[in-house]
Length: 170
View (tube, helix red, strand yellow):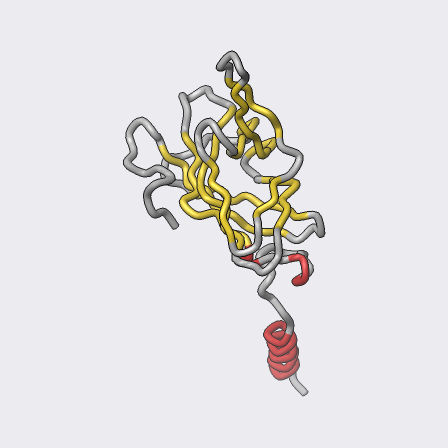
């Protein structure tokens, strides 16, 4: 058998094996049972761009749980930031606003949680590179079973943009 036929058979076998395996996990190396897919989404997800030297950004949108079970998010990561955290804003009796880091956030089954100014939101800390208006930043949310959900936040300039969490953005 000549080399050409051997290579053809080899690539045919590799192709069949590749197509025959489950390849729908959104990240290389993620067990398909740990890929949450579309069970949790962020609708109208935005990151507000700040001044050029800003290293801290806020993210808003609507967490939507499309599953039949509650999803408790306890960790967020992004390759673009050193830290990605869930926060809430609390108002004291004297009227002072204070941000507090949330250890987790539970999104009820078939329900939504609004992320907004002065309420629950995502904090993006320590940018690793410059952001561009209009770019989409990927964020991975983890639940207590280490199931991962890919979320997308669009970078906007809130001073110049009509886009906000009240406008449709996918």
